[in-house]
Image (cartoon, rainbow, N blue to C red):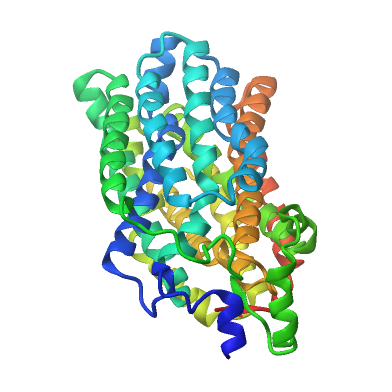
Amino acid sequence: MAAEEAASGLSDPERPGSEATTSVRAWSVLLLNRTHQSTVVLSSYGLGLFLPFVQADLDLSYLEIGILQAVWWGTPAVLLVPFSLLFARFNPNRRVLIALALMAPCLFSQGLAIGFWTLLASRFLTVLVHASMAPARPLLLRWWAAPRQYSTVSSLGLSMHSTFMAGALTFGPIIIVVLDSWRLAYFVQGALMAGHLLVWAALIWSARDPAQGPEDAVATAPSQDVSAEGAAEEPNARPPLVRSLVAYPQAWLLGVVMLWLSASWTTILTFLPTILEAHRGIAITSGSVLFGFLYYVLIPGALAGSWIFNHITNRRLMVLLPAALNLVATVVAVLAGNVVIAALALTGLGIAWVFVPAMEILPFEFRNIRAREVSVLSGLVQTFGAVGFGAGPVIAGALAQMTGSLVTGVLAVALMTALAVVAAAALPGRFGGRLA
């Protein structure tokens, strides 16, 4: 036991995450970081609901709309893994602080856009900064949280994110109609991020660098068939971080699942409001309330993520369930002929994401993986997600342009999510390690 504790770095009293429970301050840091994510991604998820107003003001084509979403997710798709490798050794608290200082003016700039190219440039700068911050999340978990509470922290974070997004998607378009300004939405985002910067600086200002930082610790205790001596040799060997990209192929399968979950999610959010209004006769203000069902179920449901992680111990099944549900719910949402069926389908799509917090911390279970390697693999999985978020609207928009039918384009992306089911079925039932 002593050897395991020494190898994992759990006995270090200076690291907040070494405690048996997560402190109030640590909870504040971790949940605020999740709120950062929510505020930033609203620029992407919210575009679909703002689209009728933005499109009319800037005269955007369907292809340009797809490109605006593509740059938002294409940029991190290219940079997340390099940023993970490059910044893994740096203090994650300070990485986030610098990113927040750069993010606020970038968010403001989206509201100042005067055409397609200026909006594209401002979105690129915003997501560039965001991509430098995103891979820090596993290291923040390792720094601040007790290992046995990783899934609880992640689940509560998703519940908060869902509450934030449900309110924004439900009331955002109504506010825009009342105030007659879509630009105000982006100004509010910038102001929120400036507030995050001040609170984050206060929370992490006196955080001490631990003797053995989370970036150096082994993220999982060795499984029973690995000797303590072998476990101790792994941290001392300090293999290149890039090795983790080939040493853990299961991370690539998780990435494929996230790719198609993300593709269907962002395609639905981008184009379904237009489909509902143009083909189903549902006004955009009513559609915004309908889209809240994506998040209403996640507000209480996300808290089940910790229970899912602890009770569905067959990891293949744990990933296969959301992949299959996502496929069915996406197809039904596109074909729904009335509000009730659409609401049920969107609720099902939200339920599929209840499993995401459990999926996000699965790399911590990989045999003898180091925390810095978890950060790199997290960047890899997020890269697949970014590709999906970007590719989904582009594929749907391009097919809509070619066929003259937006429904055909969106339905094609919905059917492609069957590939997530195939990837989930290929995962092993166990990963060979356990949380420290």
